[in-house]
Image (tube, rainbow, N blue to C red; front, top):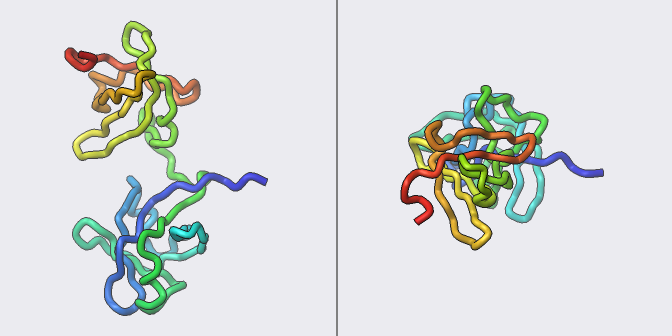
Length: 173
């Protein structure tokens, strides 16, 4: 039986204190849902071991969350968890507003320009700050970068795996 796909909502980047707290870099748009007392997550270690965990407490400290789990109470227990990912099954993904998409829905879409010429496949979505950037890999292996703004991304159809874009002057040169 196929296992339901899992999606990363956070990455453990270190320990905090001596009582089993960890520092988590959030990889979700919904940290208020994922990093609260009682939230159930799957901790996937670098060795691919899956450990169900429940959040005991969490607080934002700078750019990371300090999280404790009911399953761990000492620094010795959590030191080996550095690099582990916190995941949720696909069925527990939070619904997105209309016109917003999960990265996994976008990657693999065929990308066409406003003249309906195929440019390539959306290979990656970068999240540098103000807006996401779509990385489209051409058949020649060249990467084209499109800012995810309404002036550039004209239409997204995740059902048919197709995205239409406006090519800004100079992009293809």
